[in-house]
Image (cartoon, rainbow, N blue to C red; front, side, top):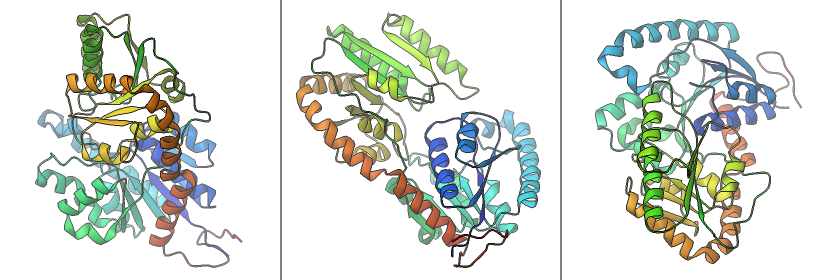
Length: 393
């Protein structure tokens, strides 16, 4: 007989980017194991719809989300009011649902681990954030709330190492669980011959993610006589609309209006990836892991990533991956030319790389690891019914 529990999930958004998709799979795995799962989100969106499709109850509630822009002095009034309102509503939510365990997604929900500890709810925090260039004091401040979590899941070895260096007292609570990354239902083989170069970028539009570097690389490639084209799939965070406008100005200034397509956000990225020959993940600053890089490999596409620890870890061992210095437009263009020059080798290596990635980032394996972690902190014992009176065999 297996004990079932009610698990509360707290997540800071409702879109379907990297951490959103990981949270979706965490909830799906718990629900598939028979647990009652309630997900608290700050707004309606595609993540909420996807959670409900998997049998998860979704609650929209006011929530304090620690965005970087709130740390600026002129935004402190908003920060304070949001923190107070979010704390009150979170407390009420816990009182209403009385969870047996909780899963907190990302470190930008800083009040949740302490609140749940005060309410005596066993808690797992999933850490997706890792920026080694951030001063130690700031990193320690951001990670500090995890001291109240009973267990911490890190999405990569890089994230785990940074957590340990920032707060050594967390060392024994950390468990590395690689992100679950589903591949496309069907893989489209690479083109046999290239009559042009179709390059793709999928992800947030932000200075940190650096799609401007890919735009610059396309301009360089065209100057060198290549028929290079670029598809950009993604959108900005609210408040970063200025960066989207900046990209459009860059595209116009480089005379690339006819060869760069801005598709906006699309939850289904696979048709876009299948349309491209080469994918680029050009981040300027640390990534805790590279989901989009792995997605490229799963789709059978060569990928170029920045030389950052989390991205290197994501593409480790894949012959179809290339690594370039962050922000280096010329090196990115050169990596594209290298892949084009070895295109037949890339075509031969792509299926093996995709198969390895599928095993490494198995959804079934991820579900099992996250469910075991939640059940462990909840102190599950084999019994006929759980604290909410549900039985399972």
